Length: 365
Image (cartoon, rainbow, N blue to C red; front, top):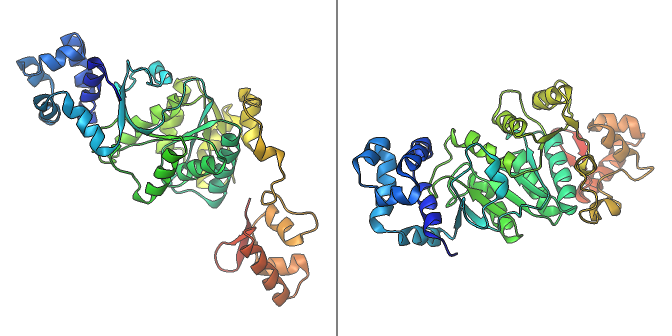
């Protein structure tokens, strides 16, 4: 990529620890711009304004020159864009503190493409995971970009669903772009990029996934999106911070209802009481946001044989109502034990049901 000097200077500032960003922003204003900060970096006022860690990180690059910035990006196979860059997401400019620059791999989302954030708990339930993947799949199939955070649980399900729907998805990291966290999502990260999506971070490329990074990251997930979809989370959680950002930004909130006594239903049910949109399927979002015409809904046009029980299949009809134990299925179906075991084995092989521990089963939706 080609960078203007001003853009390179903005990228340079992102190499400092996130904890020093407020001081840097104030210093940029004091110095009269980021280029002026670069030129006057060795002055006494800069040393006094920055922490030792921040000054050392920026000085190492300043000493080597502007070319080191591009070299560092090339080494990790990433690009970057400053606030004044042509590809910088304009949605982020509405933030009170937009990132001065972003590091990214893949293709940044266009500003005119419908985008929905999907968020939820890391310690997800089977219900939440299945719903997140299905709704993300159908939204992506309709041409909606899915934004999430690459975390375990609901984030992972959202990204996988978008890929399954043949759409694009964006992962916003709480760590540096040079590594993937959690590490088991390395292959998912590769697939996101290969499919035309993007992985982005505002943190220094080598930044670790520190706990305070994630609330900072969450404002970007919300800002990149037209609407925020909550699958499941507790009231006091990192997910709640994303909802807070979304409300501050005036975003439409959708919440998936769950069991009233499930911990992950706390935040969705609270938001539904307070006026959030009810979410039962992708069409709820598409209709409310006026997105029904953006692309032919291939996932809705064809009958999803794994999404509903064939008429007359007593076992699947029972499991689509709720999970059942082997003993309960014996009573419901009237089959003997050997006959039921054989039928359950076939349904498992076909991918229509899953064993969920002991002798209990659930339908694959």
